[in-house]
Image (tube, rainbow, N blue to C red; front, side, top):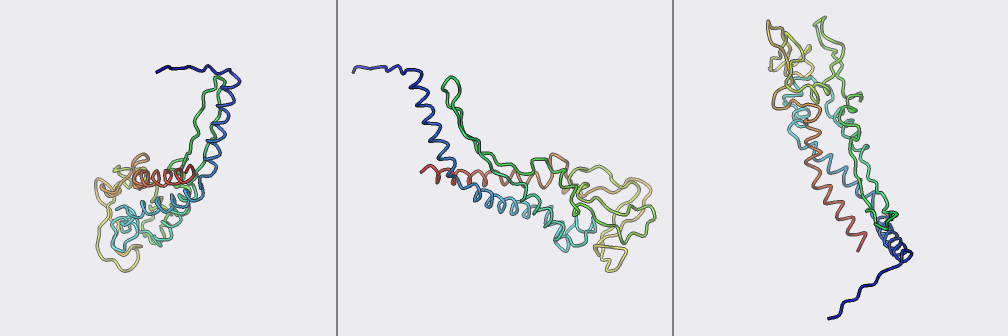
Length: 226
């Protein structure tokens, strides 16, 4: 069988490359970005609320709820969840032709908490007022979210620990724990629930959500190019 090679002139190469780029960009513009963002928000919220840490903060008998003595934990966690959802952003970059007529690929990017988990520490929900404490050395407020997300298993309050029991009246905010003084050691976030900046219940939940979010993105891309 004969084989023929057609060598295109530079202007023809450019015209073809431009046409391909225009078609790619037209297809990308048809992708429903808003739907990807909306579904991603639901996925992220579900992934976070399913974690052991979230349940320990919100359940009435939750270990973290007792340790931190959180008041209105559902309201605090809702503020945090809503903030994370609001950081979800989907955007695309259009393809283009390089000087050598190579087609540079388009891309779709989704970002969540672009500034990292430390930005959550600026929320009002990240602080618990220490209203019931009878210890004059105790701080006026407790940066519970900072402790939970960044301090790992390190001792946070030296010379004190927590006793778990039924305490239905002040000075126990949670009704399930009281802090007491001790000669050595100190209090830290419960080991199995403690987190660091790079490894905490928020970062773990976002990693868990990645596959499902990618599936949503691929579904919307396929709809756009059909």
